[in-house]
Amino acid sequence: MTVFVLGSINLDAVARVDGLPRPGETVAGLSLALFLGGKGANQAVAAARMGAPTRLMGAVGGDDSGKGLKAKLAGYGVQVADVLELEGVPTGQAHVWVANNAENMIVVTAGANAMVTPQQVSATPIEGQRVLLCQLETPPAAVEALFRAGAAKGSLRILNAAPALPQGAALFPLTDILIVNQTELASYAKLDREPTRLEEVSVAARKLMSRPDQTIIVTLGSAGVAAVRRDEAFLVEGRKVKAIDTVGAGDCFCGALAAALASGMDLRDAVEMANAAAALSVQKAGAAPSMPSRREVEAFLE
Ligand code: ATP
View 1 (spheres, rainbow, N blue to C red):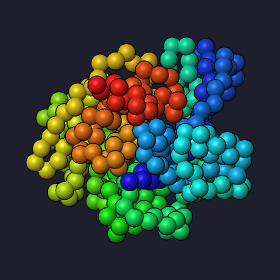
View 2: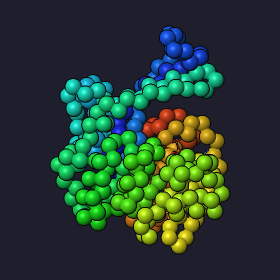
View 3: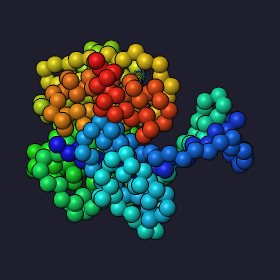
């Protein structure tokens, strides 16, 4: 089955500095690196690397960086025919400044990502059954249109409700599998601190259920993943690895889970596989370049 991702595509510009600038101050950058980023792009790369036929729908600007990012995505095996190039609109960008003491400042400009519309979704034929995977860096109205169209075709609808947005909760009733991290869980469940123990996590996760047949998955960083359904809750423990860079671990988990489910695995096996994929991803720098192949994950699980 194909994985169909609707989501953001960004150019991430990461500059290292000795110390972060104060308002009005100019500081010299020590280095600058440009990366493919955005939750939609990262998750599509993760699914494609896990061997799933993967289509990405979204938008970039009609600029050089937009074309470059589409070419990069295609190089990872992601089908990009449904990524629009919008003239006169900039490609989404994240400007990240990282200081020597690891403090950072980030400005994300949505650019073309904000221009993805329900009309773009309706104009794209989605034949047959799919695993649909969305996040909240593109307008929720577009996600809603895709999930409604997908429901009519019997597709599996996965929502990674990140970043936590007040409008995000309106999509929960249209979602079959909801994925959040602990911070997002606390925000949607209106808790004043992040739940950690499986008991607390499952009580909080149940608050987000709007239908009895839903699954709520909570990623717990190095502690692993909790999955909560109506009459069961289980924990898949985090794999013991030496973490170098956890950026994109959540995206790796989501893309790998969608790919595993698309290949016909049941939920528990798919969570095990995605947990292993995400553990492998934290051992390498970057987001897209750290997504492991299916062969690497299978070898790690043996
Ligand atoms: P990020 O924003 O850094 O991409 P996130 O907050 O969305 O991540 P996390 O819960 O931190 O998501 O991590 C997602 C998954 O990645 C975890 O559920 C786990 O499977 C894996 N993971 C993350 N950190 C580690 C680690 N240090 N060791 C092993 N696995 C990890």
